[in-house]
Amino acid sequence: MHVKEILQAACRRIAPLSLVAGLALVVVTWWTALAQAGDVKLLLPVSKKPPALDFVLEDLNGRVWQLSRLKGKVVVINFWSISCPVCRVEMPALEKLWKKLGKLDVQVLTIHVGHKEEEVREFIRRRNLTLPVLHDPQKSVAHAWGVFTQPITFVLNPEGRVAYMAFGGRNWLNPSIERMILALQPPL
Image (cartoon, rainbow, N blue to C red; front, side):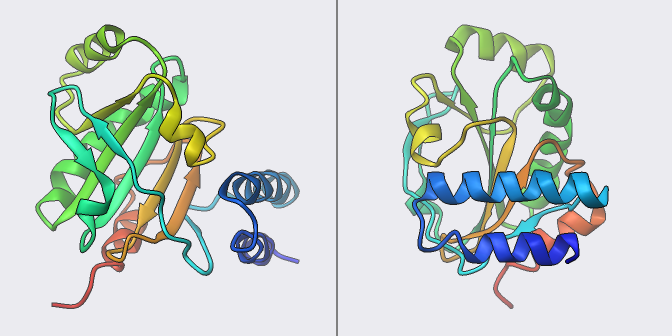
């Protein structure tokens, strides 16, 4: 069985399970498949596209974001932490993705998990990041979404359903990733 088939089979099993159990199953299968095949996927398609759990979080600028209000847009949600080296490396690429795809009506949100707000603010300030950084200091949204590692990214289609997932860092400026994200937009 090829990596693609293994990953697709794991994603088919997500629907009947809880989000946490389903994500755990995908991660274990994903890591096993990668170890066996030495293959790295750009974005992992999620079959049956489960609805994303709604949340309300405030960003570091005081703006309140409610996920359900973004229906109609493709939304990229990246869970990260300043204590995660991979997260720190991929943040500039997410910033560029936000600036580029935001013009095409794609919303990029980052959700910082844990740490004090001042620590996150200092990290953002030092790197001149301007993308929306939501703060989840109690990890309540991360727990509800089954996030147990960072970075993890979910790409939602305009109906608010999880179309893709990515475990670990990515080069968010990879043209193939951009095409996958933009392909979720409804035709004009």
